[in-house]
Image (tube, rainbow, N blue to C red):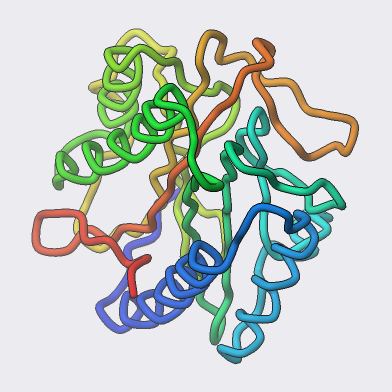
Length: 252
């Protein structure tokens, strides 16, 4: 399947939906406190998205029950809101999609709840740093498989491993478009497959495990953890390739 090339006017529409994602994540980051439940955090996010006259794109997507993925501690992605109370020392992943006027935005952060351990600070830094490393090296002519190799090498050299079986993706009129962009590479030759081109818009999202990248899905059918049972982290931005470099759209 061909990877869509967005026109400048399309990218302007995507800037709006992605700026709303950034606003919502920043709002949650400002107001989340120890003692709140994951459901209260989700409700705060959904209410804020509604205040922007936009739609929480994840709610109902593939049957997902809420507008905010709330991934606590060992849950790396796709955490479902419930009555669990967040406490001092926890780490919390927040992943949000927003649709506005038929265009989608998507981004994620992992935040500390109060003071956290140095180990967890390093864990969060790995996903954040891997994301910005990847964004910095993106250029037209690079193959997506080469980008996956670079992401994997960065994560491994940081002392962690990528979560397997899940990936970044294209985005536009649909929340998930071609291509798939894993944070690892299983093939023999990364100099094959589609090349990055100006006008492409996609999400980069490093998902970090400590010892094992093998994914386990919990009983809620959504929450993804590592088989090692240890904490993980996740960061994501939507980027557009414009004038030879990747520009982050998911910012205020």
